[in-house]
Image (cartoon, rainbow, N blue to C red; front, side, top):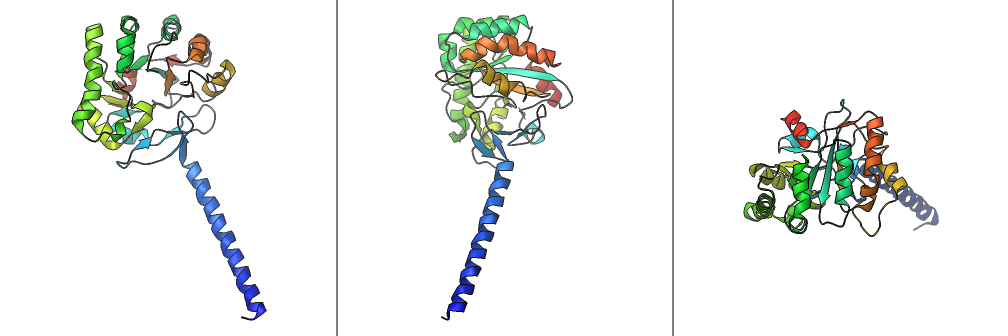
Length: 281
């Protein structure tokens, strides 16, 4: 092949590679812009098929409502929620309770001081090991929701019988401990879900509750500082926020009183999940 033709073909290959790289970069940028950062920082793209997914959020301007993997309107058909009204400075406080390590009492004290009613999502171990705290939650007007008995990846459970056992074992133990029925709220462990999971929860009489504000507070061995917590929770707070915190967080136990005060100074009030559900029905 003549040298001049080899040179021309080489240039064409270079331009083709540059074009492909550009398309690839553009696709990557679109994928990132259409993805949400989940509670632990994982990226999860939007979907509404029956494939398992991780709940994730995408944040815009400070103080604005984030977008979720699935819109609030789409979730409603499954009695599922992640956020409230965009025009009300209302917060819905929720806590996931995997075990007790001494931080639940200061959390309850801060809530009581601010007359804020929260929802605590409990697993079987918490009910077994901290029944008196569960009784206190109920006595002080908080709701207790279902976080499953063993905290498995519920999106991997395809049959209703197995799904229901995880839910019923918590509900039955809660009734033994308190003498009352558990609140009809379900939070998928690790935020892993699919459409069939939400349908099964709905069939069992539960509302699936995701969240619109959280931060990495669950690792007891690597707790965020007060400043790191406020840097995440103050700028990102927004009207209708369903706030996810963990009862195992020492940081949460230490800052909750001040955090609730700051949110109140910003004009926010606290309401129970029952108000969110009622507004969406």
